[in-house]
Image (cartoon, rainbow, N blue to C red):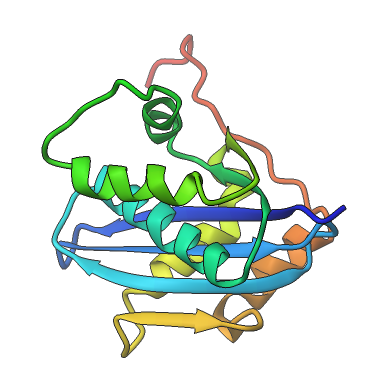
Length: 169
């Protein structure tokens, strides 16, 4: 009780060369608390994930959340956050922001999840490509992702499809 969960994701649209991010904050029962979509511009997918984390953490700070569970489908980012000695001069400013924001919470858990579990955040990240504003905050699920959120809230299960290494085309 009292914990909130942040799921966030980054997205890259190769057709137009733009990146975006999005995320959802839920309560302990999985209900919508808040969400966001942000258009980033030109960057790579790893930095888009990092921007999503930063924006999600800022939102959670604004909501005065003290106990936060963070789930993201970028395993590389989970690994970087778990390694305090990791340095990369290209991403260090935003990575430092994320580390500083994480320290504001009384308790934080950062976990990797599979893409199939992160569908709401992925949908919000992709929504950033179609919105007029560079940043949008949502007090309730946007119409464009409502069915994805309802499926998730109701425990809809999706198989993870993995290619069979022994099947050749």
